[in-house]
Length: 51
Image 1 (cartoon, rainbow, N blue to C red):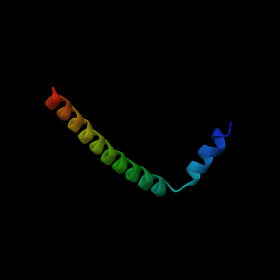
Image 2 (image 1 turned 90 degrees about the vertical axis):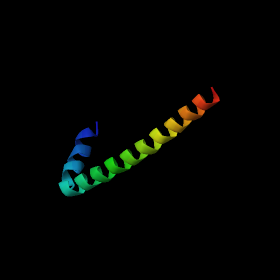
Image 3 (image 1 turned 120 degrees about the vertical axis):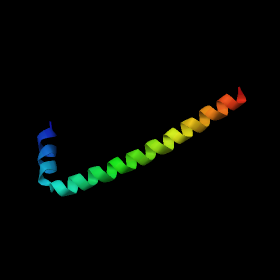
Image 4 (image 1 turned 90 degrees about the horizontal axis):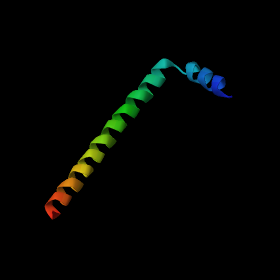
């Protein structure tokens, strides 16, 4: 029920600010995905090595 108030406050922000936050967030997410993928690969390699 407070949905309208929230969207209004978001549009109140400068678009540049929002864009920079999104860019930072995307970069961070990509970093975390790379780390997670590496860990998964290492786990699989370990499992295969153990047989």
